[in-house]
Length: 311
View (cartoon, one colour):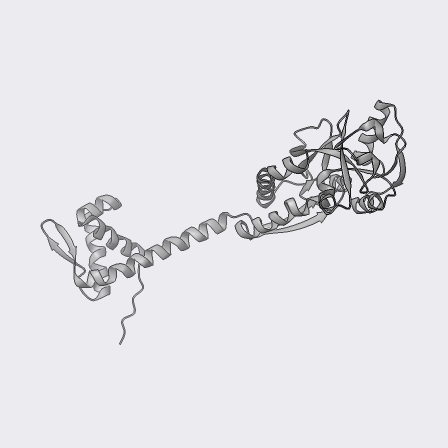
């Protein structure tokens, strides 16, 4: 009949300590246990194994053939137990739960897609829900608690306690290929006077900022059509119906494809910041805080992209 043994991991650890120390006395000192307790545990293990595991001599102990044969298995078993403990401990510490993120549509490739893969790899227990919207929509979602984190724009000075600035980007006049207003790398803001424009409606941040800049410059903005959707703005512009004003990254793919043309606004420049906001409707969860950290890291890693295309 096969003998059934319930292996005691602590007893196996004592066996391994005796092997490593080469002495019951030294093993007792290393483990902080009295030597008689070490001796009892070794004797019990020998009984469970059906034979002596150590030769005793005046200088300490050495393994018997039986001890040598089981040493690799015991070492492997203890290593697996240690790895399992580490995995369970780390798993218990990993943040989990749903995080709702509001993002500008233009951030889908530079942020949203990398964020998904990073969370899946490092924090699989976090469930990410992404909602695309305009800056104004995202601010409203943050205010009413519909989302946990948001990535809207901010213009001019801002309260740093409210949001975390991630990157500052310049604004460009966007026109159809060959359009006169975007023929040069830069264009003065005053050149927008009287030109047909497709812009978001008030009270969007970009519209309020442009209206204020126009008043300061003494020019009139001819808003031919109001549209909050950047897709509509770009479509009207691409067909030559009007100009619009966007950060370069919003029209980057079209500029690369040659279907849109851009010129940086100067004198004065029109700069906006992409910021990270957290809702104040409820305390941020561990998962929310981790997603916020991951977003910051992705923006830091993509600094070359922003430097090359947006500033």
